[in-house]
Length: 384
Ligand SMILES: [Zn+2]
Figure 1 (cartoon, rainbow, N blue to C red):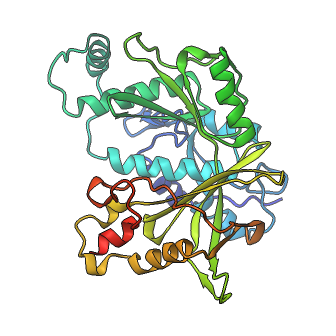
Figure 2 (spheres, rainbow, N blue to C red):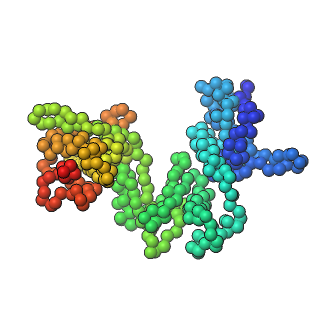
């Protein structure tokens, strides 16, 4: 069977587009070095097929034409080791993953072009600085270098994860993103920890656990110190979902459609959580409800991000009239109807009874918050 091979000129360009480094983000070894003769090149690089060149090969796609298979867009530059590894385990090294590697390798090559590679001395200085907190000499981008170096060091201990680090609210944050389906064992100690995990599995909540409750086997998180308690946060991947909201006036039966709320639904085994925004982020809508209808009432949280109106002309506040009309409708006894749509199918519909009290507002700045006991709503205050 004929193989759909790449053209020689294309292969050279493919390798140069990733600075002759292996495109596997966990590898990145240089693939070329001088050979024995004066013009000799010793290459350990391979232009590997993302979808195999002939039937029966790894990730072979029969729907591709011969020229598509031999096209450079079906190629990825790898070192010879990685080119063997990707063909041994098709299930792990999918075409999608290899295409991600290729994009990442080319983006990295753009970022690194013309920048100095770290020398052995830099590595020693960085390590000393990380351990002592004192720079050995002035290094430009020292903090981001430490973040990157730490992330890479953690990645090397478990290449199934992509690690990013940043500094937020006085804490160093490490984010672990699984590159593939990962089997991951951990043990949680203490009743509080178990309760947090129960909420995660049953109600689709994010789990934030003090690291002292968290015991992983075979996977180490960076150490903390007693004065700086560490937390481990596990976030679920949500499913894209749309909430449609409309009001029905109980007397006139007139329906008023509100803007669609785009967000994500997070499913646990017993309950689901939805979080979304409409009106360019000004209107936020969220709730947690049981998956099976238990007949119990559940409540919605609606909040307005007033910060997005700050500094704007009060006569032209974006979405103001739409949102005001929505709250006016609710305060005047209209029924709130909602439906959750996932992939075009309605997951559930719900409606509220007539609201007996004003909803509680969150994120309302002091300047526009109504005085205690006042019956005027904050949106009207904004307009005055
Ligand atoms: Zn490699």
